[in-house]
Length: 337
Image 1 (tube, rainbow, N blue to C red):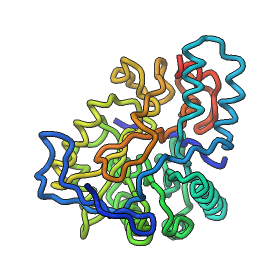
Image 2: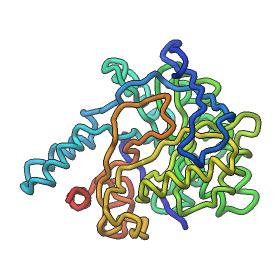
Image 3: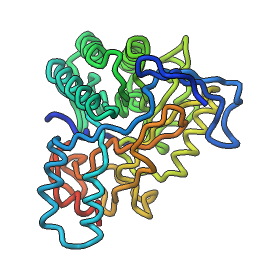
């Protein structure tokens, strides 16, 4: 099943702490079906802290502008909750703008004692030229771009969701294009892992209805043949239910032979019938989800975040006439009802 992403908010015991970084060693799985506990996982990560809430961002301005007209108590309460909920910063622009965004968020996070979450979403051929198409013009430009992102983060605490849908879309490419896509993901993952000691990286692998877990495991081995991928993200901008996502993560782990840190996007999977919402693009009946916590825990095997921005359109389709990534007031109110 193909599912395109729309981008979100953008400028459009464990071991000790060293310089804000935590080297995480874990022998814990996701449950009784997790891989052998001997498969010890190691990764870079920031120390535990609240996720950055950038209240001056345009997204929160849109929420505040919507609030006075909302009279239904439940919708108003849900909207007020969103005003207190961090969302990820999507990096989709040229390097100069992107580096400035990263540096700005890092500075604000340092002042607040929090951690910024970035979504690197600029790979060539992004979204296979669908509603959220775009990305860098070619491989060299992308390598320079991801190096620039890495340089802007430096040794500062951060979380990076790496290229939503890019791995899953690779399964739909011809052999030549797939090899090129996987090479870029390998470069990006390696760059962030090697040069950003306080950054937790989650390589996106799509959602639980898209790619067979065994195929995901094969692609992870291809992307990082010498050292296991430590973290994956699931359900970005999608609406699959929690139990299904967790089961899918476990099956990927079993096929991969290593435990994985998992970041789940729970921003829009809050509808009681979310498993029946087959349409990926602004489906009728979608609802904003919930977060167990807005604090990042470097030792937690499963974390949740609002990666997609509630109220932002998937494209001119379904219940929205706005282009991908644009705020749609009525869409937001429907999601909060």
